[in-house]
Length: 266
Image (spheres, rainbow, N blue to C red):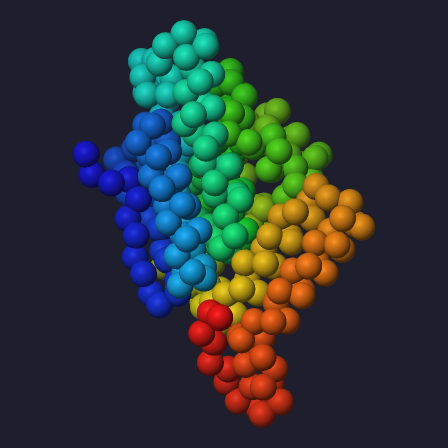
C-alpha cells in the first residue's frame, strides 16, 4: 500500500500532501491515522522543522470519511457499536490529539473541498488559507452522524458558536468567500497561487527563532482553556527560558546592529 502522506522538505519547512486523489483524500483507513500520528511524533522531535504546511493532491483537500466504507461497514466503520467506538478512539481521534497539540505551527493550504472530517482536520491547524475554488461543510448531520473527530470543539472556537451551529446543524456547504468573511480562513487566493501563498506565510514564520515559535504556539493553545492568571504564570516561565536562548541574544544584537539575524536553533 502506498503512503497516504507525501513529505517534502524545504529548509525548515515541511510540506505534507495527502495523496489519495481517487478518494478525494478521504479518511477511513486506520493506516492513514497512524501516518498522521507518526508524522507528529517525528516533527515533535525534529528541532530543525519550524513550520508544517498541510495540503492535498488532486481536486480536494479532504473529503472526510469515506462514504463507501460507511455503506459497506468497512475501515473504521466496521464491527459492533462498541468496536466502532474503539475504532474512533484509537483511530481518527488520535489525529486531533497529536496534530492540534503539535508545538510547530501548521498551515492548512486548502486546495479544494474540505468536508466533514476534512474541515475538522483543517481546524486542527493554526492558519488556514484557501483556493478560491475551495468549499467547506461540517456535513456529518446529512449522513445521520455527528462530528466524531473533535469538530464540535474546534469549529466554535474559530467561527463562533452561532455560525458553527448553523454549519453543523444544517450540514450546508459554504464557499471560500463566506469562509473568509466568517474567519474560517485568513486568505483566499487563486488556486494556481495557493502553494506559493502558503509557503510565503511559512517562510515568514520560519524566519523566526525556533524556540520562540514553539513556545508562542504553546501559549496560544493553552490560553484557550486556562485562566488569565494561570496563563500569565506560564508566560513568565516561558519568557525566562526564551531570554536565555542564543537565538534571542542574536535577534537583539541583529536589531541593534541593523542586520539580518543568523539563528542556530539554540
